[in-house]
Length: 140
Figure 1 (spheres, rainbow, N blue to C red):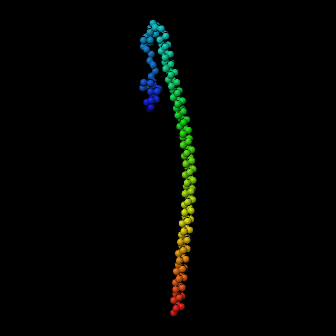
Figure 2 (figure 1 turned 120 degrees about the horizontal axis):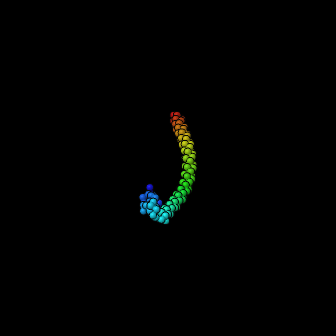
């Protein structure tokens, strides 16, 4: 519970308590001795207090409605941001997957080139060996 809201609603009181009638007016009315102006004045005061509390309650409701509307607006903007971020994330994931495929292709081509180079080196070594053997037999 917000203590400032309670103070705003109830003033120095802890909670709402309807005003009590003075017992002296009750006794006078019951005995038929008093006038009816005092209880009417007190009733009018109660009505004014009730009207004041009602207006304060209406003001609080209006303020709560404004806060709620602002909160909804903020949440709507945040939802749009999250949706945009989700789109960027999906795009990044697709780019990453595409990069992974390109890297696999490059690795496969590099492996094929390496095997080809080893084969060429082996053929050159065999050709050099054959030339050396041919030259050695020719000298004899």
